[in-house]
Length: 280
Ligand SMILES: O=C(O)CCC(=O)C(=O)O
Ligand SMILES: [Fe+2]
Image (cartoon, rainbow, N blue to C red):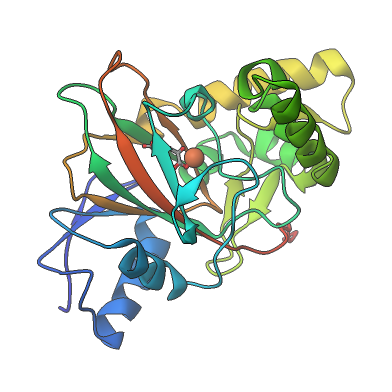
């Protein structure tokens, strides 16, 4: 056994002990990649990763993505800073899968807790795979082959994210570069081949093949179902914790329940590919 892996729930999550993420050999990295496929989100305690070290860990999974809206660490555009004293972070409070407003949503992310509040500020992750597997075969059949629309405006409303004419213009330009995109409602994981529910409240606005009422009712059900307690875990952060998640088969939300206390997270985002659904 190369890694000390402690699963959190059968459906999602594991803690990996005894590693310094600054010094990994290729075998350990390989096992981390495998653990991510199996557990969807993995956690490491007591890490101290510089922005560059966090970036190189993330790069072991693929090229990195630069977010169109969030600010980053100075001189390291690949590391996003989420700072509760500087930004409106309410978009992260909705269950969401990162950047699904893009044609090629990220493969995954590496998130590090830099500053944690004295209470609260937990993050929840849910498994779309477990959620899909728990549906009745009839509903699974109905959902396979449907498509959805994902829209950046849904999570970044202009009135909250633009406070001046200049910011408004910038955000309008970002929206123009990111028109709504279509994704399969059930996604085949490109590595494991397993089907996953690929909807989230943050960005999914409609099911394209249904009329408006049917679409909003079914989406409301799927949002509720996919985030049920059995399919999600809740992580209580300590400074120096690192989480890596597979963004192709999970969604997450960050609780904003710590008043005006200070919370800072650093995130590296790994580029992904075009979601697809394989029948059969
Ligand atoms: O702040 C957090 O815990 C997570 C925020 C989030 O949604 C993200 O980093 O993708
Ligand atoms: Fe997120």
